[in-house]
Length: 205
Image (cartoon, rainbow, N blue to C red; front, top):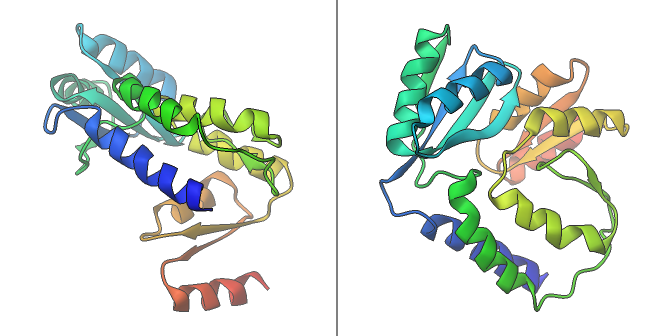
């Protein structure tokens, strides 16, 4: 547990430090499917980085990259029928290729950590596959840093594996709302504080 907490903190620091503050950006594109957004970012790049970073739902895609390229993509998405596109108040362009330096630093940090088989299988947000053995842990943790979060596929895989209840832990209820859109009959609750835990347990009984 001590190693896990330390590495999670380092991962956050590495991702924050991978790109100079103010040079990167992220934006949410609403109202366009992922293939249309992929076309938008290709056309908006113009030699800079702008890529799909999160597939939150079929109609909500987050992009990340160099700030000018992200701004061009936002404008282009509007021209192509996007319902709404907004820059996000984040400190760095996470989950795109600009994060590769962070992945390299994380690899060094993980090199001395002993990894065991997970007690509970983990659905990976990098590819919606399932990690069941120690050998899969580090390679996919490293891929995840600079790759898109495939949230929609991840939730669909959890449902396919038999999950019927989903609990979001942490501030906010964004993932809870998204999950309800992805799996119609799923129980989805958020836990933001100790009182929220009691409510979640009651709702899931």
